[in-house]
Length: 185
Ligand code: GRF
Image (cartoon, rainbow, N blue to C red):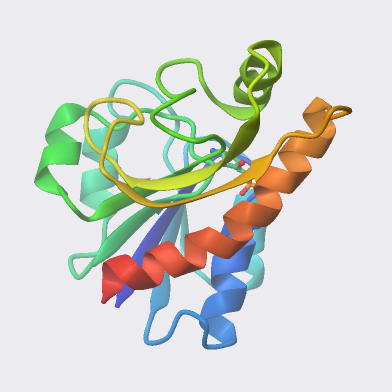
């Protein structure tokens, strides 16, 4: 199966996917391309593993340009810390083939502006009892697609933005490969 991964940042989730393909936790799969919408360390991780990379600057034409760069045999598009919004036409033409990881328990704390530390901040400010991560299908409604996998944990009394982010990343590394296997098979 051929996977295309979209990144905007450090790419530790991308690294986890690369490692899982290498160690057989994600069997019969290959990352055929990594696309970034800005210069980021995720691109360097891909290059280090001899994966083809493409930088498509963020902006109005991103989705249509991405369509042109996608290998024809793409089975799955994985958004791994990707910050641009894919347009409706793109989402519809790859319906059921795009997944995203979100650092909270959707449907809560999703939507526009809800990314990175903004999510963790909102979770803490609202005094939530738990948080977690969600892998979901991508549709044109931001963070609204069907949930594939979700895992939660209890928020501790002395939780900070940093500890929250760290716990969520650990959960992401666990559920993202599982979700990819679920969707591919
Ligand atoms: C993850 O927490 C993901 O949920 C969010 O962005 C972060 C990406 O981290 N959308 P990394 O680039 O994979 O390290």
